[in-house]
Image (tube, rainbow, N blue to C red; front, side):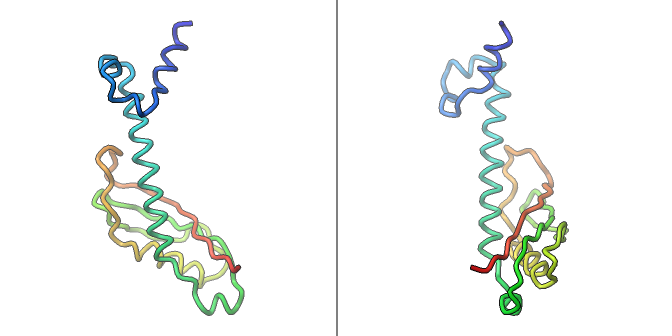
Length: 134
């Protein structure tokens, strides 16, 4: 019965993090850091996907040929936000779409630095870039 309350303490809502009670309980601190880190990670990923989407261009020739597909692009973000090692992990089956997806990621070039709370020097990503005609 004692481990159950400990699990509940680890799932402390973010809004309660700053309460004096929580600060006096060192056992709950790692869980709180996990919540903070998870929020930082999710926000960073969301911002990254938005930046890539903003740079995405549908090649005119691919549109004319009615080419559609999903490209999975891999890359590394350095601690300072520089994007390197851009490559196609999974092809759409169309060279033009694959190249356009890599260009969208490469165009972001220097993204914002990785937040200190995430504790990473480099971060490998694989993101989906979809091209779909309406």
